[in-house]
Length: 191
Image 1 (cartoon, rainbow, N blue to C red):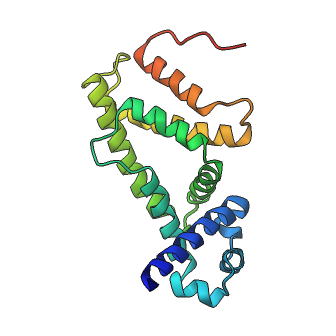
Image 2: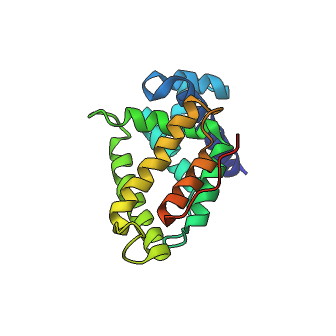
């Protein structure tokens, strides 16, 4: 019972951390702000996560678990579903985007995480594209070259959507990208 309570508290801390980072960015998020949000002292928070960096790594790992599929299980249609799912959880997207943007600085504690993550995501995306198109896409690009662009589009869509959700529909824009990959004509935009 104590273990379940501790795991529940850790999950609550991770949710609060996501909210605080979404509001203030990683550098602006303090352990004190997270502790206050969950009704703990800072010392109580440190019992669960001994450093701010340990908390950040746990948040990033938790976020990736929500989107995880077994290696090789991704397909283009599942990517569309993931984009739609992300549109239903703006706080998660905002936290991820804030951390991603901050992580490009040299000393940011999430830099290594994102560097490793992008290597893996590009590999997964290349596998998805290879499964859908073989060794060459209709455009002639290899899956590896197109994977870089797919990942850039997916992350870029998140930033545009966060900044102007009324003008940018992530799911529709991603479906347009899939039409572009196919070389097919996209459906007429609604007016």
